[in-house]
Image (cartoon, rainbow, N blue to C red; front, side):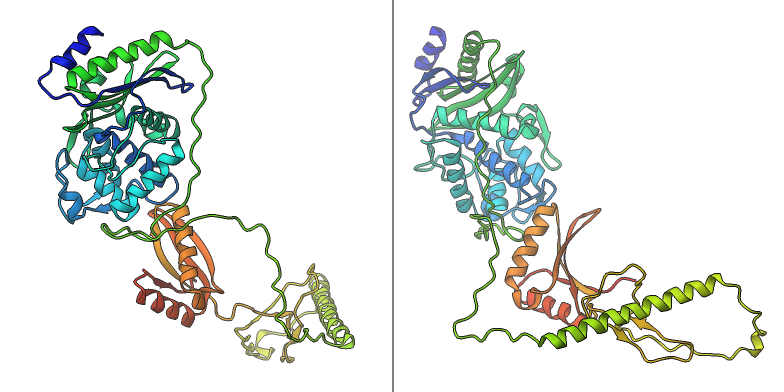
Length: 482
């Protein structure tokens, strides 16, 4: 311990304010703290929050791992450390995540922020809301990468809290932080924490950070047996000195922590949907949907003041209509029964085919459907009986309600069912006039989830598409299928 502190004092590099904390990750118990609540520059520890929000967005269908992100000029211009992204370049989200988590690339972090938030400023606001929800009470973010900016500050305690949430809230992604190397879109990058990962037994993350103002920072997590310890250091004077201090703190944590302790996972924050309705455009604010309430009941609207009450048909008329429907059904059932009886009764010999008169079947109107009424319940619509034909009568119990509504529209393909349903709802609200009576349907295909509106006529589908396309919304009509 003395040797490490002497290294801090004798190093040629001006020492940034020093802070440290050690926590039992299983219970959250603080085992040691030094200046743990002092607001300091977090540097690239910031990317832990950037990645936390990206993981949250993936989990809730805001964006997909294999979605392509278009790199903006702003993202490409970020100073090192960086992947070397070019303006206009398209790169998969998963590769940006690896670049930010493993190499600590600033251009990747900004591209992630713009892809999820629409702009880095909007994303930073979400970072601050998330930090508050996680209990990070002394943290303020100004950007997604951690480069020094006025007011961009955090504490050792808050960053340890964030590291613990990363481990417990998104365990499926936590392995990223222990990778020595990773493929970041055709380029292999090395972990900025590889020396510590290789030298300390049980270490598996989490994130390094360095700027001139911050010094050398590290949030480290290690597991030995059933014990997991997280140690955080702010203000190291070099990578070697910082790593030595973190190793010493972890050793202290493993000695002090009990072997057996009840695991108390941190409470995850309540998710608030905040996703762009289309592909996020870097540099522009994304539209948001906020879910603030649930509909508990759907009361019937009250009658307008002064409106006359609905006029009820006379009881005699209702009885007559009901009787007509019942009579029609009864007649149909009698005829079907007679046909079935005739089919089982031996028939007299039929004359030769040449002697049989040729009868051309009368075409059935397209808007009429023949109903099977053997076990049918009373139909809600009046029965319709067609005119007698040469070969008998045709019984039709109802008119088709389809009205030619075999058409629909497609408003895009998405990476998750949640995203497709979200777009359908947003589009329906945008175009109530033409889509009010259409049904929303998500169809899963080999390439994703198709968002459809169905149950439309050809003219309605064409009109809806024209109106949506005039607003810049992707749309394609879908014809009836055979």
